Length: 264
Image (cartoon, rainbow, N blue to C red; front, side):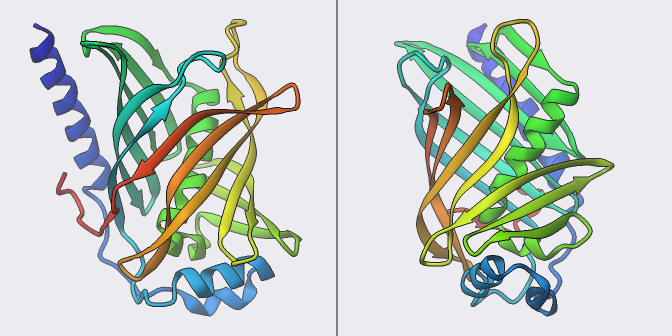
């Protein structure tokens, strides 16, 4: 029965991924004319990251391994996952499988579709542990989406969805707007002009009955050139608790695949 349920869960994710990517338009030329209008650190970054790219990304998919902590004060667990990203409008779907004990796993599906977030978690693809939606999930999913734009940076030039504001010589604020919903976060750029961190306030389930806004951040590293883009392959996520950065996710990506449309 568990194997049947696992297959059903996998098929559900595949169907949702196809729905997300089905409307991916054909690639248009990268809108380089907008680059001079952006804050200085963003201009330097995009000039470097988009150097060999001629068309805007339409979709992205990748797999990853790594480790994850279900509880911030708990042990790390191995995880494997797959993610699909669309760019018009921006959205994502992620599926992860966390090994919690020999022969025991947890499946999780996180998504942001037209600005609406949703998280589904099940034990061994059978017992639903959480099925969440609502304004706090929308906000968290859109922030995750915005932080992922470093994987397909041509979307940073899409003024329909992204607006930039200068902070200082190393930081800029990006605002993401999708389907009437809006979030914002700060990208920090290193001496090599590439993003090294993202910061925002995001809702965290603290177990007190209602999610609370807490500082949240992610680090980027291991940049590699793929399909004419310079993109990071390692992501580490943190919640900031009582002034301390507490890591909870550490993912290493396999090579992303671009513009494959609905083929999942």
